[in-house]
Image 1 (tube, rainbow, N blue to C red):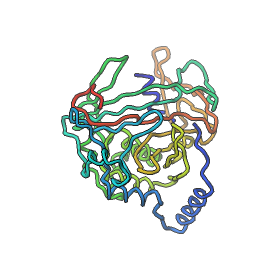
Image 2 (cartoon, rainbow, N blue to C red; image 1 turned 120 degrees about the vertical axis):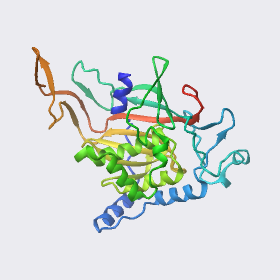
Image 3 (cartoon, helix red, strand yellow; image 1 turned 180 degrees about the horizontal axis):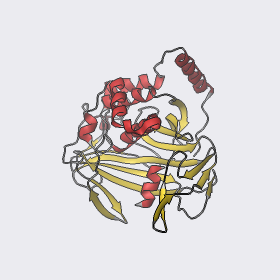
Amino acid sequence: MKDVETLREAWDRPEPPSPAAQSAARAALLARAAGRRPKPRWLGRRLTVAASVAASVVVIATSATLVQTVGRTEPTHPAASAQAMPPTMVATVQKDFPPPRDDQWIYTELRIQGHNYKGRKVEQLTPQTPLKSMVHEFWARADGKRVAYKVNGKLMTSNPGERSPENTYAILVALPTDPDKLLARFRKIYSMRGADQDDWIFERFAVTLQANIVPPALEAAIFQAMTKIPSVKVNESAVDVEGRPALSVSRVVDGWRNFEILLDPATYAFRGRRETAAVDHEERVPRPGVKAFTIKDGKRVPMPPRVEWTIQKGTVWMMSTRTAVGVVDQAGQKP
């Protein structure tokens, strides 16, 4: 589990935005400086999709399973409009969002690539440093009572401890769909984060989209709430981890990681995330301003500072693609 946790805690270099996107970004910045916040074109379209389609989802009628899957090259996502879908697929689209039962499990599969520091020596990470790959499967019971995952191929279940919108559907659907109230709720939930609270909230929005099945109205509210966080940028000319055109919503967190949430540019379905070094960075232990201690000769003494690793600007730290998400009846089942 150490490798999994290391990759979790820590996602190819994004292509530069087009001149049109740069112009839109400049306009947004000027509008912000003037005290007004224009609604991004992507957000307006996403709200229209959410209202007209109610997150149309393809349901496979076996084992009462709701499933959305992404192939290695071609994804399948909720359609932007029922009229654009093949007749055979239209028959299976649900106009209303089908929520999971409390005793069902939400399954997600992620293809993750990242760096895994082993702690043996100072590692210098550059764009040429190979990324380590893994597939991570996770099950979370809708009522939040249990989570499940595999360790060395064996299915393990445990109590998730603190319940949150990320791992408990019941908490997720109780969130307000007003974006201002939603952002205020997240600020209250994560109030202990202090000065880096906005960084943490942006990341928690990303994990919520990634790890749960989000009802359409709430999904739209999350997108709106993210745009209210300072320094959030939107790139309509990005590419995702698989090299496909994508919409990127990003923020620099921890002072060095450009954290991108990657969405389908047509349907705005969550695809994945990518974290890239926005500046050269040294990872120091303990971190500046943090007191840490170790035991020496039976006594508790301050831990001497050291550099664990360095990363060059433009280097991918971690990236992932959500390859499957669905509702199943038992932990260990796949959609």
